Length: 236
Image (cartoon, rainbow, N blue to C red):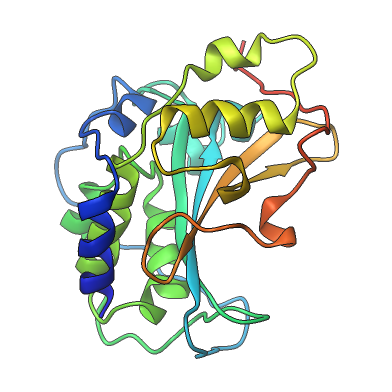
């Protein structure tokens, strides 16, 4: 079911191979194997019908502010593995009034499967957690979950957020409009933002329907109003 819906959306959306990868500047996949971290459940298992999806994208310069020396964030934040812009936090299934999570999973991702995604999501622990909490409710195989995520990620074109960050009187609507202008079929109403208490953008949340086509975000996913002032930290 998930593959039929995704195939239909790919036939419509204008793909731009390699454009999203440019958000991971100089990123390299690490060599060798590593242990797959254990994941602790932080809430109840919940299986409800899926009504749509959210691709949550974290803005690394803001996330890494103050985390440059933390061992757990070294790949994303130290600069030794490359400089990152937007990266995938996770692909989340949505439900009506709630969301599915922590579904039973008979398979766990291998270290090789996690490694191939580290330029998209530069954290082994986060990749393992996203599969356990969200991916397990979408498909039976972690490889399928990450493949779907990579396809959506690779379909995105990116405006120059370093330039956008320098704009005077930047608003949430300005960011939505810039992304929509760079991506055919996307409209500002499809693009949610998460902003912290200090007004800095932390995440972009792209809303999809059950058919994996862009869809209007609900109020919670949409975040700040278009007129609300926001700031984008460039890591400088």
